[in-house]
Image 1 (cartoon, rainbow, N blue to C red):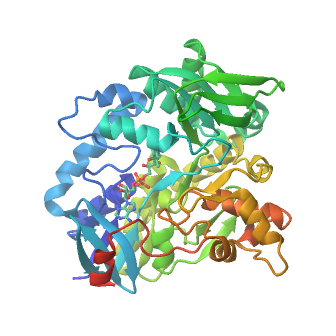
Image 2 (image 1 turned 120 degrees about the vertical axis):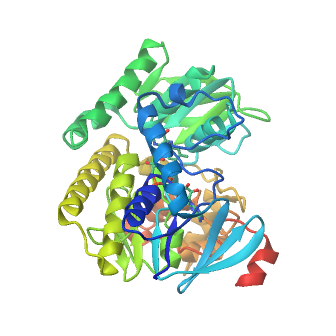
Image 3 (image 1 turned 90 degrees about the horizontal axis):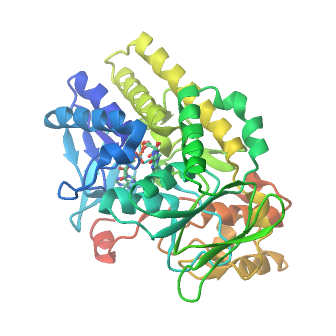
Length: 454
Ligand SMILES: Cc1cc2nc3c(=O)[nH]c(=O)nc-3n(C[C@H](O)[C@H](O)[C@H](O)COP(=O)(O)OP(=O)(O)OC[C@H]3O[C@@H](n4cnc5c(N)ncnc54)[C@H](O)[C@@H]3O)c2cc1C
């Protein structure tokens, strides 16, 4: 029987596994996390007394249903939690499980590795007390911790108001929710946002809840700096009316939307194309998620779409696997799934306009700002390297010359901002700036583990 491996036990991976198991197949489901559910539907440890129903709010029913479905599925699956896929070599996965290196061959590979925060640097962003927005949510949902007592939320993402609501419910004070995109952009994006009216209403409700709670909810701000002696003390910004404002706080959550985690797809041989709406290079797939023969991509790891789109695209990719293995596919199911995925991903395109990636703000950052915190490289060092005769003009050469993106995170954090700095230096063309190529190990591992299998 063909060995089918799914990477990622979030909504996409679980939905795919369900569809394959329903046809009597037994896929291997690998996830580096200790518990299934993925990022948004993260499940806390059982000894942590967190009221997830309260925390998940209107998503509580879907959250509970997904975990219940997973429990039902478990006896029919080969589920491998706490297992990191750190490299892919031909048709072999390199794994790290409980500190031990292993390999796993596959015939069909479905990567549903989810997304991570997209971060725009600003002066002071390396101070203790600054977290990514997703990191702030992980602290809450995984460990029951708040990142601070008085938290400022800065960036441009619908998740800012959602995370602020979750923090408020768990006892934090919210200093400000500051969005860099003007409100007019949200109005202009309305036609696209109407593709998912229920999600739109939920987003508006979160905004309303923040306003009702008396939280400053600002649009169109220009971040100036995060200030503090040895840790965060305040967020300083210019509001849409041009006034400089200082919000005292002891933590800042930074989030400019999500970017797909594409390194594994890259190592598995997917090809990439530039998407000007998201200003990201994304893996090329067909309408069912095929990236090349034997390789399938689904969920936020290939296109940001949210949990519902992730589930539908996971099921769709499973249909593709079934069809390719000669099990046939249910045409009616495939059509419905493809329509849902298309609609929800269109909605995300609308969101990308309503909550825009701040390319102009990044291009205007001063030289002194740290760009790559792993290797301590400033924006000025990147600009200086590019200004030299025969200096680098695309991101991989910039990385080679400056070490920006060469540290522990392998450019997963600084990559998007690096791409904008490089694009600005060559005249603004994001596509010409290029993309950082995926490199193994995709996440830090012990050298001994790499040496024993690679
Ligand atoms: C930090 C964060 C918080 C979020 N919070 C919310 C929220 O509160 N509400 C909301 O509506 N949406 C939220 N989202 C978005 C939401 O998580 C997604 O839309 C949805 O979960 C996507 O499902 P998925 O299955 O594609 O990926 P995910 O749910 O992200 O699942 C991907 C899985 O792949 C695993 N994985 C990744 N790389 C590897 C590897 N190399 N080896 C092994 N396993 C790997 C991860 O551990 C993860 O479990 C959040 C996203 C992030 C990144």
